[in-house]
Length: 473
Image (tube, rainbow, N blue to C red; front, side, top):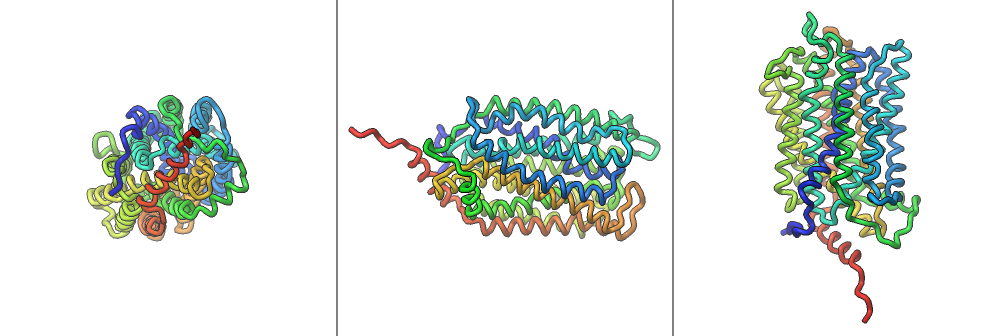
């Protein structure tokens, strides 16, 4: 049976928390973009679905090529703070500015709005890469123990889902508050101003949390002193790293179904179920309650993972949890649209399983970095994790292009009564299509070759290699 790490391999609690706060900062903008940006552009700022689909495709694909470059740069960075932590220090402020500008919505012509959307969206994606490629890579060097990294990953996703929970709880409420309350039709009077002030608050919070993450974490795993840099060789080794290739495809499927479902939720609840912005529980409307219970379920799942992370076979557990999520999401095609209680329960079940599955997959990338060092005698942690961000962005390309494309194909008209055909398209995009992507992710995890016993062998071999040979008598 796999053994837990020894006490000296465990991290101090402050470091687990500090690392988690970095993903809380990221998700202030990541989840807001994923859930609200498409609706903000189509229903509030007046950009067509066709323009939005093209913009997402162009910006995301071109920006995804930036991630490996940042990974290569980070691997070659030498500083008193390490390879990856300096990017958290210096990249936090641009990241906060980019998130604010994305929703700043200045008064422009129709053409000016498109130009502004392209420019700010590109800036946001670049700033996200500059901090998140190094931040993700930090997990691979925070400890030599695979199980300790898995536990750090579970804390990270507690922080990520905590950030997402704050987004789902407070974005619509803050937009309503700063936007002048409800108008006669039961909707926010001035949503543009509401988003401006809301994102300003998130920007300040994100910068502060990234700085805390920088201050409270440490890099412990160092490349071999005689390791030589070779960009072509490293890229070739990455392509020949079969576990990495499988995780890459799994991540693309994962981000595709998460992005597509979260982005469609606002449309599904507004048009298919017919809910408005009026509070139904505490200060939450139907949409905020639905999204926040999903995020809370993900947090609970990640918390449960922390208790089994030291002994679980990550591949098997992640596969099973992902398949349960696929079934739960697909069930929404058959759930009565007016049964909100059943919708909440099935949605919570899907997200309860999705949370720990995501944390397990991200910790598996650190195992893949170990595998690359073990097989090729060269460690390229930044490059491995930059490719995960590439997969992340490619998945958001799929979701970001597919959502407005489906809306346009089924005849969606913003802020209007939808046709039966349009409602059917929204329901498909919210249920069957995300479920299919989740099923494909589960299939890729099933064929992933690194079992926990194999990872243990690799970890022991690397520890032996890194131990200096005794000096001759």
